[in-house]
Image (cartoon, rainbow, N blue to C red):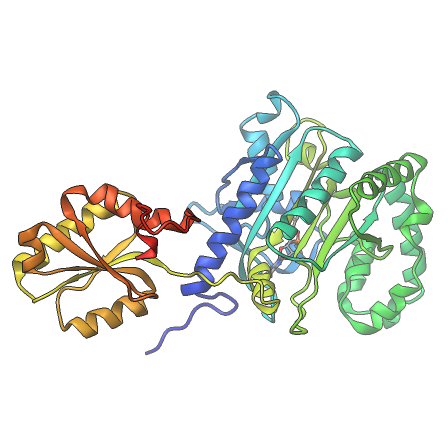
Length: 440
Ligand code: HAM
């Protein structure tokens, strides 16, 4: 019997796992610069949180949720996105009683039962932010600027922002009516899903992936002609902040986003793959007016975005932006001679080294050449070589795997000696007598 991962889900290991960690650490640190704090919601919620929050008419809720009954017969759902769960958390914990706006970032897996394809998985990781409790074009703009800058910090240059306004409730009501009228005359030719969409929310027809329906949608009325004066003003105010910050953007009249909670500004960010792969948008977000109230809280708005971490990692790779790690381990310990006493002493030394803050692993004896090959395979920076002779003298030989240079260190001053080995990474001196060991 052989087992494979669940369809659309995948194991992440090796360099992909390191890259993912690096990307998410960078995004988290960057979010902190914008005064965001971490929020860790549960991985599943009662199903109502998503059906009411993410929205009954969205494809996510209609077709893509991992929903099941728990042993207490309650319907629960693995989160298909974070926004609804995070807002449920804000309401459950009455966080809105604090200084507003609340600014939270989050990171972790989300689950959608979609057709697996390039850049589209059934379990994927999102990094995102939500700014809750204040309504201003400045915060909308700040959120977009932050998303763009985060991607630039990761190394991307070809970042393209698409932006649109869905207007306030009044604008969307008028627009929905106009869409209903337009699509009614084409319903006979349109797919089954669109028959449902026209009653649930005709805006969703604009997201339909069926080619013929997309052709029909091209002639549909545009939201910009239905925006209230207030929404139009707000949209152009947000845009003016983007102009001030020289953010490259394009107004995309067809961008409606597939989640029901959006109002006013919506946006998506795409990054070109130099290898020609299309992973879809790396980031999507927007403003939401009624979500906090819908989930039982006060009438507070919010704005946020989420990025697909796997898509970012694939694009970094395609665009040659993945940073080669020079080494993955500080020290690989090699007990020479295979004697049990030496192995035990080396084990103790390795533990001390780890406690001093260095990463380390060891071989349990064996031929010198095979231990050294193992150190290379593990991408260690230094081989830490100790045998009976060295132990008697209280010393160890440290060999730089790349340069093959070797020095002897005093084990009684382990802390100082190891520090010196790494000081050279920052030391730019040309002084041969410098204490830095010159990259030994
Ligand atoms: P979303 O557009 O559904 O928005 O997802 C955000 C990002 O998650 C996408 O741009 C994409 O990079 C990634 N993503 C989505 N589905 C998949 C998948 N099946 N496989 C791989 N990556 C995927 C939201 O989730 C909203 N909650 C964003 C938001 C936050 N709006 C306001 N606040």
